[in-house]
Every structure is written in C-alpha cells, then in structure tokens.
Image (tube, rainbow, N blue to C red; front, side, top):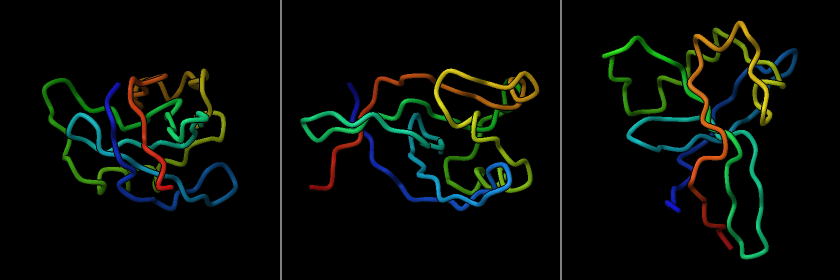
Length: 107
C-alpha cells in the first residue's frame, strides 16, 4: 500500500453548503479525498479519490489549481460518498474507489 500525504484543503460548494475538503497528490495529479476510513493503527485510507476527467491524451496539471473547476461545477454530497456516482457526473469525473493508499496520522 502506498503512503500519500494530505497536500491541503479546498473550499468547495457542495450542494447548498460550502465545505472544506482535503486533497492529495497521487499519480502526479491532485485528487479530492473527501471521506476516510480510520484504522486502529493510526492510518487513514481515503475511501474515494475524485478528480476532473480530461480528454484522452491530455495530461492534467499536477497542482491543486485544477480542483478549482469544482467551484464552478458544484458536487453533490452523494458524489463525495463512496459507492455512488450520479449519471450526469460520470463523463466529467475520474473517481477511484478504495485506492490502495493510506495517509499516516499526524499523531
């Protein structure tokens, strides 16, 4: 299992609310990491990683600025939760369920 770090947070409109959501850098790009599973050993695993989907052959920028697209394209709370992708979001979101990564606790 690969260790990654929380790179920061972004403030995003989620439904009718505004939320602070963690992001990580994984596979040379920024991903939202909205929900974690916490293990007794202090490791946290993101249950879902979310990034904007780009056209085939386009290499997305590595920095977190690409996540600003979600400020203009609000996500629903259901999109952040594991196991559900709204049909209208499938073509524009790249979602990885249960990635084989963990974030070590800061303890």
